[in-house]
Amino acid sequence: MDKFAFIIHPLDTEDMSRKYSLASKFPKPWVEKIMTLLPPVKASYITGVKSKYSQVEGWFIGCTLTAKQMITLPTEQVIKKIIQSGKLAEKMGAKIVGLGAMTSVVGDAGITIANSLKIPVTTGNSYTVATAVEGVKKAAKIMGMDLKKAKVTIVGATGAIGAVCAQLLARDVRDMNLVARNHLKLENLAKKLIYEYGLAVNITSNLNKVLPQSDIIIAVTGSAEAVIEPHEIKPGAIICDVARPRDVSKQVAEVRDDVLVIEGGVVEVPGDVEFNLDFGFPPKTSYACMAETMILTLEKRFESFTLGRELTVNQVEEISRLAAKHGFKLAGFRSFERAVSDEHITSIKKRAGEKLRRLNPISTM
Image 1 (cartoon, rainbow, N blue to C red):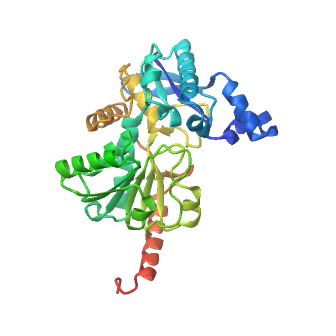
Image 2 (cartoon, rainbow, N blue to C red):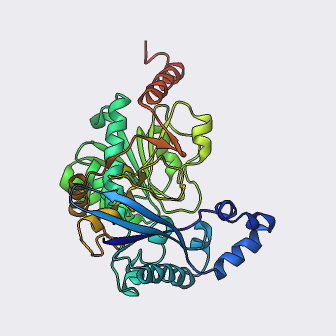
């Protein structure tokens, strides 16, 4: 039976304390220092991933650095730790390894890691994009939102995921904001969208400037800290948070009951799958980036399918086809580790409408 591996890491020291209770007895700086010295670990063994064509198993490999450490420590040190995790996957018999959360962002987004291993590497970004866009369209339909009339904002638009999300949604919308720090890259992406799809495109590095007008927001910055806070968000807005760590502050869900926040890239995995690790999802569901590694293994496509900072629409469409073939599909919506029902979305829509009427009583008369 073919085997895969997927590299994960604790988002913060609290995650480490939940896994190793002794860590909670030490100051946070001590725990962080100890983590830099620890070798990678086998976090769990994954069984039961099965389609009508094949069956595979694999491992979660734990890279012992937090999200903050992966950004603040020297890049060479972080990449070395990730490579060590990949070598553990090799030793255990994996034929392909996926990069989870910040491990897919550091440095050159997996290229150096792949060149240092004997097995292929994939970031999972292709399937993450596919499910994020599919999820946004489904949420918009439930919210009664006409995509052609919606103003869409892509936060982190010049990254691999953000740029392709923009291209895929450009087929269905007419008005789009692109938000990122690199002005030249923003200009180049805007020109491409205008030329190929003919939609209106605005570029900016000031997120708060465009949030109040945004109906749909896809957030994928790769930042270690939240970039979207409760203020300035338009009532009734849909926010798809593709990033890990999250781009959307948890306060948004706590204080804005008129805004829908969904997690990008949550899918049902075929078969009687057991992850043997609690990462906050219901049974038999995973992040899309994890699923991409499983899909490629089921298909016996042992190749670095998604790597580096370039991503194409063709890649996204290809992995979507393979996912459908093997029975992977978009799971129900989730927001901050909790399921979001269609009824809950309807209640958000109702509260958003009430708030908009209070804010604009004349226009709703």
